[in-house]
Image (cartoon, rainbow, N blue to C red; front, side, top):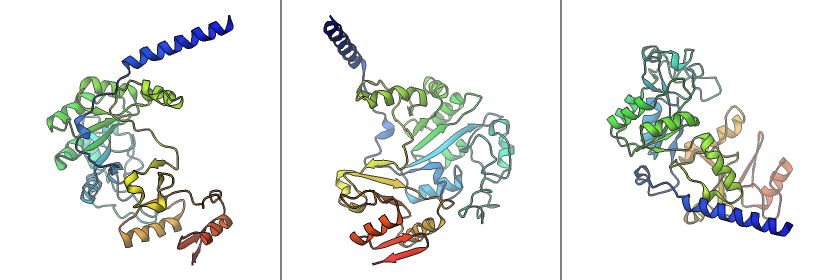
Length: 327
């Protein structure tokens, strides 16, 4: 009897999975992606916030000049209904003002210095203060970058900004140039209903079934509403390296994967300065590494481990705190 019950339950589960599979279909390709023949893409987060004041025209202009593939930005709405760009809900962290964006008029925001608090050296200098950098409107950004692909995140707000946002996209004819994201399911659903022709990214709650199904190997059952999934990766983020690129960067490709990392100057100023100097000399201001260990040995977790691996490997230079070791 017990075996029969288990068999019945198993057959029922298989039937449920089979019926679910019949309705599980990938979302249709969106023309937003047609322009991207190469992967991976270079997406300038806030226009490159680590290099200059983020979410400003100043940042977007310089990111575009570098040849990035996509400009990423964060959307808010002012008290008088204008769509503006800033990462935080308040202006406190990045400007010389204070208060929530949604409670301020555009005129009040335009009087703020959007480069006021940006510093490359943990508050020792503020090179962008008084340089005329202001909080940009989305209208200004659309005007300045025709044809530029954008990834725009709808931030938390009391008022729904779907209608003015959709109207501006249509006004500028950017239906195939914008990917819209949001962590907030209510805001994302509202935008999709208002602007169904625009590519969207999955919101937090709607992606939970995908995450859970994927953990048991059933991610293929998920029926997406979104054209993209932007899920924060654990640190360090391990990503696949394309097979035809692994031979070009063998030092950072380990079993087909690599880790793209950043170093915060506040946490490790010496390491940051070394990478910065390397970037200035080579034009490659990016750190990408794989596990620091030799085959058959554990990952390095101490200075002694580091020196042992360094001495047995082809590595040319080892930095340990204030010491530089050369072979």
